[in-house]
Amino acid sequence: MSEMEQAVQEIRERVCKAAAQAGRSPDEIKIMAVTKTVEIERVNQAVACGLTLIGENKVQELLGKLPSLEGQPEIHLIGQLQTNKVKYIVDKVDMIQSVDSIKLMREIEKQAAKIERRMQVLLEVNIGREESKGGVLPEELDALLKEAAQLNYVAVEGLMAIPPMEQPEAAGAYFEKMRQLFIDIGAKKLDNVNMHVLSMGMSGDFEEAIRHGSTLVRVGTALFGRRDYAQK
Ligand SMILES: *Cc1c(COP(=O)(O)O)cnc(C)c1O
Image 1 (cartoon, rainbow, N blue to C red):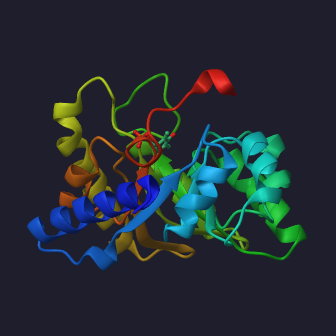
Image 2 (cartoon, helix red, strand yellow):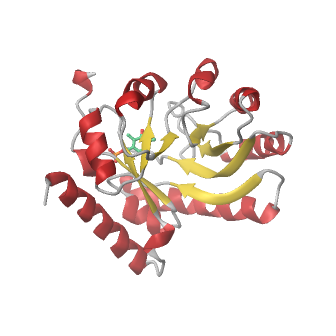
């Protein structure tokens, strides 16, 4: 077995175990390969090993990799997105997970309308209320949901969050808050809003996220090893 196959298998086993402990089916949980800073050959290896969903943080990096990307994985943008870059990716990604302003939503609407494609998005929640982080505060979600109801080419499919790194022991409490928001919003049955995807959990905490209802874990380091930002 190759190193990559082994890493993928280990992650699958961790997901299965956490799901079983939570009384959930592992089929409810998608594994995303987070490919930032990872060279394209290794991204292709991961896809060949059956990880058919990849996440990139930066528009520029994604565009650079696309011509050499093999296997047609599903592609999500997971990093902060500037409105002026939406036009470069609107026809290239399957979902934008990091929507955190009305302005950004409107720009996605505008660009998606041009190509008559409905863009799936997640609303990113700054659940730890960190100043340095993207995402909206929980109390700001209503305004975004209201806006979404007015749009024709944006479909809100769920929520995404990154809990504060500094307090890993508190991750469970943050994940639980996210689960509550996810359930509450889903129950409102709003136009254009379907709470299908709860994207939370990374290499260090995805088991905990799965225990709190995550349906999509975003895994970088556990799959590819430590990132070498110096190479970029
Ligand atoms: C980098 C990144 C990840 C992956 O983090 P790891 O700890 O390496 O698994 C997940 N989600 C987002 C939004 C990221 O930027």
